[in-house]
Length: 271
Ligand SMILES: NC(=O)c1ccc[n+]([C@@H]2O[C@H](COP(=O)([O-])OP(=O)(O)OC[C@H]3O[C@@H](n4cnc5c(N)ncnc54)[C@H](OP(=O)(O)O)[C@@H]3O)[C@@H](O)[C@H]2O)c1
Image (cartoon, rainbow, N blue to C red; front, side, top):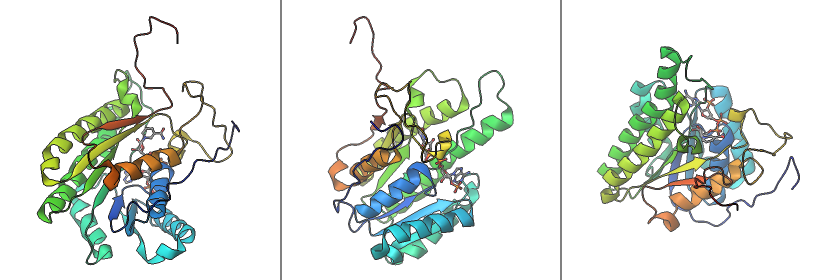
């Protein structure tokens, strides 16, 4: 394996044609790669979000350069996960961009990692983490699923969970992601009767800015049995499958993609 570069095939079959998606936090890492891959899978319209106009414009421009044939179908909307009272407006803005089309896919991707540790966590750090990584996803999902039910949309909600929540949870990040796994199961049960498929993806350590990774850095990760970081492209390919018609019978699953780091075993024999 080249230590700094590996080529992952990008999903290139048109399995998302005629569908429209909103990916929260599409400006970097996993979210940006999902937007790119959804476009490769022929999504009709894609909307990404950011807190920053500059970051949003950069990401939208880059996606348009990568997909000139979809130039008129790539949009950006300002959204701060901390501002729950603005979520109805966010949906309104998204629907304005979509015109006569419906919003079919919500990916709850945006999130933060604070690196706080039990013993020193402050009330403010706890609230910030939980608000951005769990409460926001709860409320945006509520708004979007109400919209999907009302318009009889056979939609998808896909949540970014984390393999860290397979460990005993002790810091707020892990607990927020444990909450996301629970929310995934609860929403899946509640919404499948309306034809809305809810699933989650639990990545292991992924090569993104969240983990301070940038192009040219080593892909090696000693803690991952497969020996390297997971690449955003690998998460994105799975996201396409789960939100396409191929994944419609996968309901309420949180699919691990960890290079083996969340394989929990009773290790009384050698492998
Ligand atoms: N990287 C990993 O190892 C890993 C592992 C497991 C799970 N995950 C999960 O995967 C998701 C994506 O992570 P990533 O690694 O791709 O991270 P990233 O590169 O840091 O991207 C995070 C995205 O979230 C957005 N965001 C952050 N705070 C926000 C807020 N308050 N309001 C709105 N948007 C906000 C950012 O947008 P702006 O800055 O443009 O506003 C950015 O687009 C997260 O939920 C993360 O917890 C990551």
